[in-house]
Amino acid sequence: MGRRRGTKNERAPFGIPVEIVLIPGQDAWAYRFVADDGGGACGKVRGPADTASDAVQDTVVTTLADLTRTWHGVDIEVAWSPLVTGSWTGRILPAATAESMRADGGPGGS
Image (cartoon, rainbow, N blue to C red; front, side, top):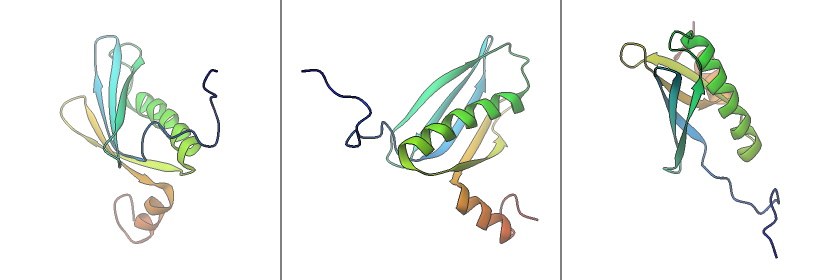
């Protein structure tokens, strides 16, 4: 008998993401994220090396946010910082935490 997919008892393939690194390449941007359970994953966003980093960041965050919402029921936000020339690191927070930090004058706050 085959294994059923999409059941309520199916375990999430990763925990809630906490950090992401984005590195440009010749024909794609590579990314890797780390989750709160020590797991994580990596992938690529195909496109020319001169693709704007904002567009690539939006693509990665949209995909990761959709997966996190589906598996954990949590909305996330990412605060990006330059890592080295052309590369980026992002701190990932649940959306409610990010909103409260902005209200308190924390990162992204006024």
